[in-house]
Image 1 (cartoon, rainbow, N blue to C red):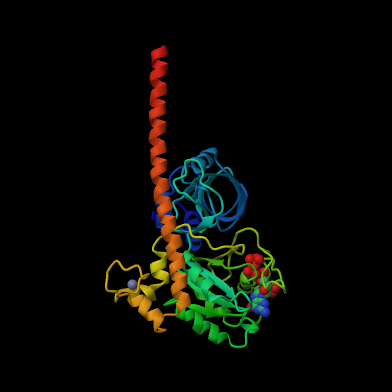
Image 2: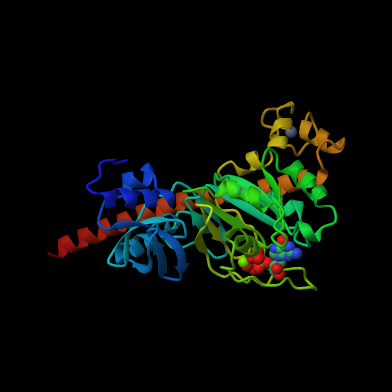
Length: 371
Ligand SMILES: Nc1nc2c(ncn2[C@@H]2O[C@H](COP(=O)(O)OP(=O)(O)OP(=O)(O)O)[C@@H](O)[C@H]2O)c(=O)[nH]1
Ligand SMILES: [Mg+2]
Ligand SMILES: [Zn+2]
């Protein structure tokens, strides 16, 4: 990073950006017109940007929009947490992301897109992803397993936050249950109601660090943010008595500069956890099964047939819960299908590209002949 400063002001600006997560990676790519800023809110085509002192709204340049529409859009369209270059209230460049939390979104294949399924990037440039689960009717170990696979598939660091501890008679039992499936991952037991355990979460919110929360609607994400912030900055909503579900109170994504020094992104509740990336998520989320698999007789064992399979043996004798193995099979099938579709789609896009090249060559020949 360039450490020669023309003025005290330059130095102060850089220090402020660093406290917002700026580092040598973004500095390296910050070439072109405009000044760096971070996306702290998105409202359709309007982006809420900040440089630490002031914040303002900007749109995106035609060039960025065009690129996003005709290439792999998930890389290029600004999302919350992105670092961008901005000039005269127009975003001129989205700096390459260090990571992103994405998931499968409903909808078909876009023209010229290289992937079969649409992906939705929820947030970019993250240090920690908090999987928030309420200890009311929201509590579901199988769902936490899915969130873990999603976060790992994106190459991100998960942390599990079991909230609403005040509503459960034996919350410690839930922690033990979760620890069995979340091997080596911190599990925090908190209550936003009476502040139990909330201080523990401050370790993730130190200067320059960006944390995001995901979970179902009504899990208690916004309430937790308010508790950590020390005042009510986000609207919260009640959980339906009959369904035990939230009412999708948070609808947008916002990044908050926390008094602890870090940044916290609140997300809308997730209805359905669909995968999009496939970056070894299953191996990390099911490291116990991966470990058992070393004892399988055949190195390419798919753990579906009994012959010499250590995983099936462990499920049969109770070492491995049957529900966990079923969860593994289901997610593995989904992720295998996803990579197959993405491969196929990439091949098809390549074929279409060559067909287009051939067609335009033909067209050029025709016009030459006419002349
Ligand atoms: N008793 C208790 N209630 C809580 C706690 N945290 C949240 N709640 C309640 O749970 C309900 C839902 O909380 P929200 O914070 O709005 O949930 P959310 O996860 O942000 O939901 P969406 O914005 O819909 O995704 C509210 O009625 C909160 O008061 C807690 O620690 N204890
Ligand atoms: Mg909310
Ligand atoms: Zn096996």
